[in-house]
Length: 111
Length: 114
Image 1 (spheres, rainbow over the protein chains, first blue to last red):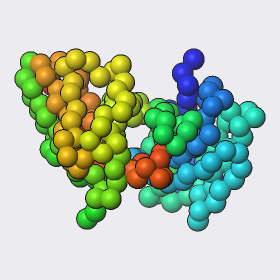
Image 2: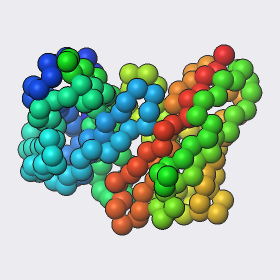
Image 3: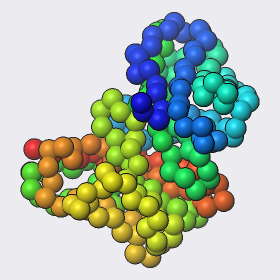
Image 4: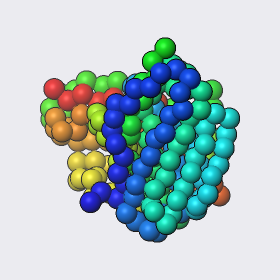
């Protein structure tokens, strides 16, 4: 079993819809959770960063962490065609630990 | 632009040749990371530096790979005797020690081995 599991998609949703992306993980030591957005042939861009369980909101983006279920989610409200990209979840155990990435989910927002 | 800079952006090389990639981190960041990413996969950790010290290396980093950060500023990643399986995007990232795992990536260096 991989440490971080993420459905590769692709996921296609109409413009304006709420998008739900998620990852599961197996290592209970993970405490730091991140979401990155990656456009084609570009480097990943940090979107959200959370510590431990709970929710964090930033504009149209909300990150949720449920450590009891080892499950994290990213919600995108009022999705736009410009949100079409690959979304990578990432996590680490400590501030000095290496970061482990999921495979990424390809998201298409249909105009 | 004060982001992470990588050079070259694209490199096509023949099998068996050596290639070198350079990374310039964000100027105040003292941690520098190298990751590798292939199509349909997430970035895989290769190695990281704190200042000039190489603190961790993945077992993915075979003897043909070497990374340096001689003065704690820019870093180089060299691949000797390239193989077709080395074809990938090589990503550099940097962070400050205090923010630990909030890392910022460059645009990547694409390597194609023919």
